[in-house]
Image (tube, rainbow, N blue to C red; front, side):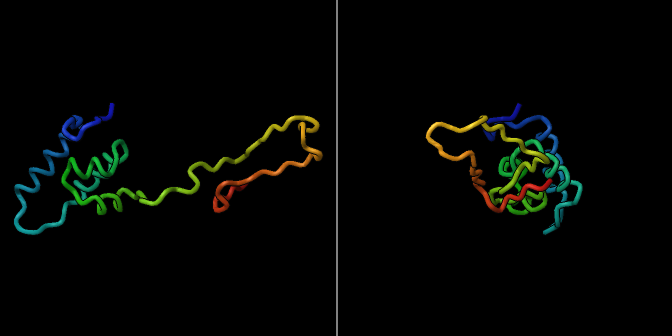
Length: 114
């Protein structure tokens, strides 16, 4: 279960906090975060939000977001189905003089391919 408050840190995150704390205590001067620690932080982003992980591990939010491959902009097409079937009523609908139907696509940039 995910924590709702920042101070309620899950056990898996506590392990990574300790690893980051050990690395920070042992480093001398400005050093880049080792790839293994970045990988652990990115892995946590699979379960928790980038914001929460960056706060828990005291990391730069933007740097973690880039490494996690997350975009800050909204995603236009999340699911791309292979086939979509609309079942329309047989015959005419009351108040409509034609049997033609118009399908409106809310996001024209979202392309559905077969």
